[in-house]
Image 1 (tube, rainbow, N blue to C red):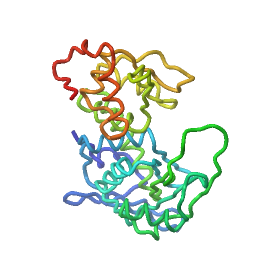
Image 2 (image 1 turned 90 degrees about the vertical axis):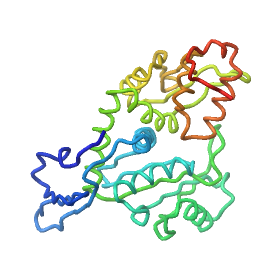
Image 3 (image 1 turned 180 degrees about the vertical axis):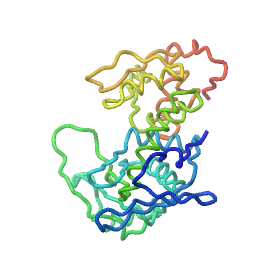
Amino acid sequence: MKISLIELLNGRNDLEIQEKETTVVIKERPKRGRPSKVVELPKEIKLSEENLEALGLFLAEGTIMKKYNRIELGNTEVLLIETFLRFLENLRISRSEVKVKISAFVDSCPMSEIQLKTFWSNQLKIPIENFQKVSWYHQKGKRKKASPYGVVQIRVYHKLLTEIFYKILKRATKLALTSKSLAMPFLRGIFAGEGSIDKRKDSIHSVIVSCVKYKTLIKKLLSACGIKPGKYNPRMRGFPIRGIENFGKIYEMQLFKLHPAKDKEFTNRVKNHRYFYRISSPSVRIP
């Protein structure tokens, strides 16, 4: 399945759209003598597993800031940031066009500002000159241990692209609800960003999917995959998922796959669940 940008932008009289063989050049009509914004994007956005995973991850961890004409995604995991960067590259946005903002805690980070920028520049293959000033914070109160490498925000500044990205995300989200095959990769992105594991000794009590802004959507996506969550819990800020059959479906569909640490913990704890033998799906194979 694909999203056609020409169809998506149909009716936008404020835009000039030039169609090429595989891309479209989209240009704002001039306003009051201001220079027009121009962007060249693929004619069609393929809803591949990789692209849906990236869009699900963005829904969980990203922000569209229309006020500042930017889209951004923040995380501490290199693999998750790479997932989003590859999606941007699929949109013909190169890494040289991406800006990076790092936020770090003085108490947890052993590096200087230049060391921190160099580390992330090497990890993400983004030029160091694209890095903005690091924001330093002091850890207050009781909270989980912060990443020693800080939180990285991937930012793309472009007014027209911000508007189009919002439309792509909205259309992809709607299509993800139409079938299990589209809902699964979309949920993988959400689980990587907002999924957590509620432990019970060496086993697992529940999986929590945080979703303050998208309660109805998350519940529908879980339902499309045959997962039955509990009632929304305001304290947990999400839906608790309990029961060995639900856990079996999460494993079968590899919903934690994008986040190796979470995936490993979930798998090990499911194996230790006292009702593990009850998993009914013959396709579930936990080594």
